[in-house]
Length: 207
Image (cartoon, rainbow, N blue to C red; front, side, top):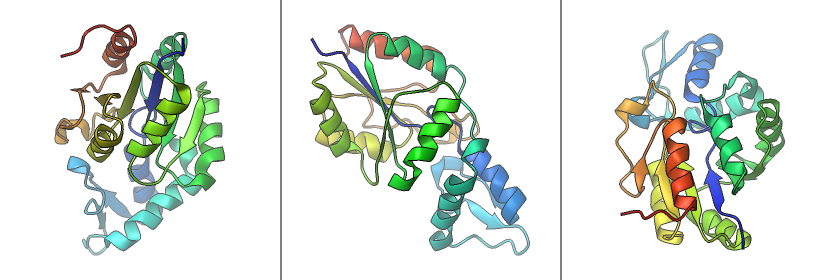
């Protein structure tokens, strides 16, 4: 019988990102970053002028962070321990929305933190890649973890049998973002989330 499958996002689930992105914007670009509510495109303000950074300039800055600053990112508390426990009974795939050129850097980054699982880079909605991965592994039970509602909606559409856990592991922004309506549950703490995931793998009933 095939093992269960965990498909998990990386940034704000396994690794802190927004806090370190904000530090870099402060140090290198004299930009204030306040992504409350998860709104990146309106979260950047140039201190010298007080003007909002245009959305067309936000994504190149984010790209620049991933090109040179990934070493800043720190492990979410409990994430490594949870993955170790899950890996004893299930396969794990890290599905990260980064360009393909980031794959080697992401793999090296996670390896240095003791996380060594398959990494798949993706652009756009995660529903179709989750469906493909679940089919490829032939898992009877698949759990998906992500911090963004749009990905839970996408997975609900393309892979409705997959259990969906909404997690925002960054305390700075988590209270400002509502639970994803297309997720089965919202849990921001790995010490609690791992028990929920293991219960799904063990076939415990879920309402």
